[in-house]
Length: 510
Ligand code: AHR
Image (cartoon, rainbow, N blue to C red; front, side):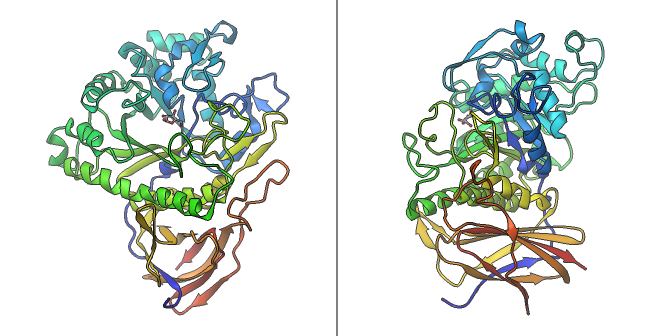
């Protein structure tokens, strides 16, 4: 091989803004995400505010999470919001048929969710029910949430103890309409999406971005069907709002095996390490494909692409309820996350939001809580979100990776073993580097062009073992530390990345 890898960053070429909303989150009534995760009830011994765990709020506030999606997922199209308001003891129960077939007591409903949003200092993304709900139900929910006067729903909200309307900037028009959300064809769903969106009204100055339920994986036909419905007006000028909905979603999960046996979260071979990372890097290609279709109808990029479910989906931890989707989270998950963020940064002009699935105790979680002791653990994925906070609302910079070797082919596509992205905000920049090599460290020359660099701080996330993870007994097995192996280089900086590691280099610019 011919010398070290290079990452060429044009510091003077800021491009599209990376919306902080790509660092969004997701809370579904699924397993122990809400109950035991976010919410333990007022009588719990775990310190809480009106039933919401204080430690979870503190950990997520430290990430400055920009938004939280709720109540699903598949659960959203089974959920009837009126069951979750009023005195808790009088709320009707329901069966959570998708997730463990357990009985849901509706003790966490609209008021509890909006309380959580306020405690987190974040923004609400409420997902409505198209699959089994009515237009009037959806229309009344947004009225209940956001209307200020004495309308019927605003009055009902007040009777339930909340005077002021809430802000709800994001509203989902169903979920996975091609599957659990109604098993529809794209052509049938798009008619419903137009109809339901019409009745999700802007009340009292609350401006809603309506997000139509989009495609799975590479289903560009679904995306095209949604885009076609806008008509030629969308392409005519950069001005003017998009309608009837303003964004469309995309779901993509990373797994190493087939649906029936997705792979273990913690016990994997080197081949499975690379397969997972190759599949995660597929997100970049998916974004290109869906964006290409969207660009054709919407060259001014008025319609946002919202990746409102992404992340790893492994077999559940042995001994846990298969319907609860509880999985461990290793250094491999951290690199899956960093690859997704690199892709979101590269596609910042189109990707308006993304929501990892899911925030607590389900799939690729930031936070795991012990069902017995209640102990809270921050996962390696949490630390990637923390290390990347400097990318929120910064402008993407070109970051060109030049490798001395030909990338190996994994799972039918070349997998470069180094990934990078960068952004800038006024007098600073942040470079993210992922060394995907399971066993070899890597020297990287950061070729920093166009502006003078006056200082730097570097952090690294790694561990001895690729499957390292955090537990209540060893909560910092994978935690960021200072990366000291950063030296001045004639082109900028030279960085020594450990094998299987994620690093961020914060730069001060003159
Ligand atoms: O995140 C788990 C589930 O995955 C969601 O409920 C659903 O939308 C998707 O299939």
